[in-house]
Figure (cartoon, one colour):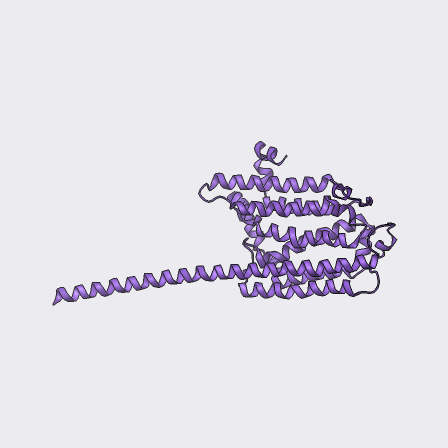
Length: 339
C-alpha cells in the first residue's frame, strides 16, 4: 500500500502542507486508537499469533511511512547529489515498527491483563519508538521536501514563541517526568484501564511527550534551542534517576496500586502484586539501559564534534601561517630588489 501511494504520487497540495505534521499525526493516531480488551489464554505458540491487527494503527503507520517515502523521493529528485541518508529511513521505519509492535501485537492483546505487559507497551512507545523517530530527522526531511512558502511557514512555527517555550529543555524534562509519575501514581491509571478514550489519551501523551523529551538531547533536526553536548549529557543523566526511582517505587510497594489487575479473572500468570513488581523492574532496568546508551551516543557525538572543530581550527591556522609566510616572502623579495 505504501509503495502504491508513492507510485501514484498523491497530490502535492495534500502532502506538501507540512509533511512532518502527517508523520506526527499518523503516529499519534496510531497511539490514540489502538486498544482492545481480548484476554485469550497465552498458550504457546498461540501467544505469538495473538495479534489484534487493529486497522487504525496500521493505517496511521502506513500513512506516516508513505509520506516519509514520498518526501524522501522528492528530496532525491531535487537534490540528487545530496539525498537523504539511508540510515535515517531505517531509523524512522524502525520507530514505526516499534509503534506497531506496541499497539497491534500480542503486547496489545495482553496489556489489559498484566501490568508488566502494559509497561512493555509504554517502554516501546517512550524508549524505542520516540528516540528512533527523533534520530531519523523528520523535520529536516520535511523542510527539504517542502516548497519555499511551506518551508517558511514551517520555520516560522518552529521558531515561534510557543514552540520555543514548549521545547525548552527544562520544560521537556519536567513534562517527561511529570507524565510518567502523573499517570502511574494517580487515579488516572485505573481510570484509563476502565475508559477507552482516556486510555487512548494516556498512550498518546506518552509518545508525544517522549518525542519532545528526546528531541533536544539526541535530535539532529533544527530546533529553537541548541544546547551544548555537556548540557545534553547532564539532561539525560538527571533523567535516568527519576526513571529509576519510579521503577523502584513500583517494585518496592507492598500493595497493588491498580485494582483493574486484581479484578481481571485469570487462572494463569503471576499474582497481581508480583506482576506489578515485574513491571517496576522492567521500567527500572530497561529504562536505565536506554538512558546509558543515549548518554554514550551523546559522548560519541561530542567527540566527533570536537574532532571536526579541531580539524577546522587546524585548517584555519594552516591558512593563516601560509598567508604570513607568503607575506614575509613578498617583503623579503621587495627588500632584495630595493637593495
